[in-house]
Image (cartoon, rainbow, N blue to C red; front, side, top):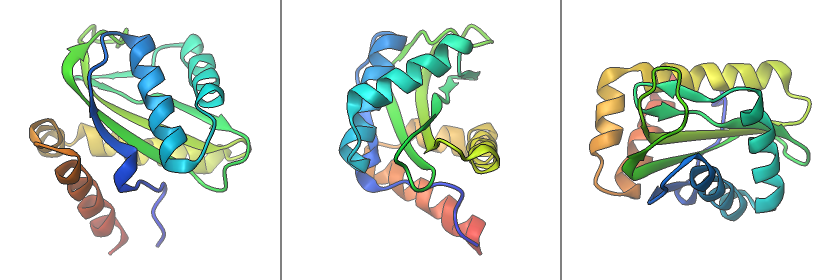
Length: 153
């Protein structure tokens, strides 16, 4: 079984971001670099989705996501914030993990399945703690690829 989304080492980052706008800008840059996309276009789609309602998932996690043209399959990025920042989450808590998802424009069910997989991942308390405690991008990526390898088996 194929993973529901693709993540790669350069789509994982530890960053400083003071607020939602800075978080979305950093996330757009990571997507642009990792997946050869235009950062401005990615930001535009993420902000458009965010304007519909906050993607602050709760418990310190945000899952900004959007469907954009010119993608072949869902791709993901994960940012760990050095300091928690406000993201207008439903529970009112600041976020320190931001799991971004971009899917092809016409990927209705695939986008929802990938979002559900990310949601399950960040709801797992031990995984959430491990990601929060990971010392660097390599450790974070290792945790994520172990999960997706386990889900494929």
